[in-house]
Image (tube, rainbow, N blue to C red; front, side, top):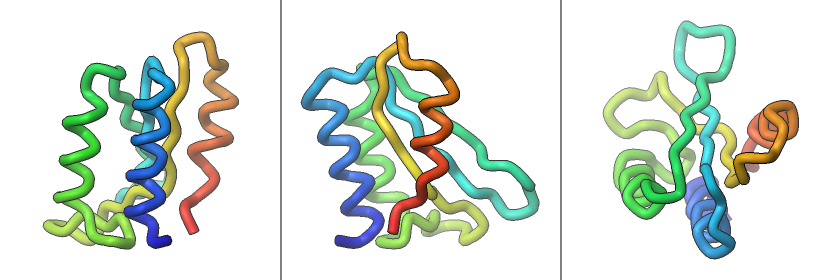
Length: 93
């Protein structure tokens, strides 16, 4: 299973159990730390389609190779931020 398929599976799983939010961690050229993007449940279907079309199978942005998705997770509002960060720091393989 390639990285994009893993991301799509993570989205589908989060949608199926009704996660309050979905986050992706992004490596950006020139920045020392990961960028984290969080979307509410209501946006997940549209975001999943965007990521499917905008990123290649290795989760590198098609229009600029300095941006890459490295991790993702769905979560509920009561989950501690540290737990979310631990999950986002586990890269797709």
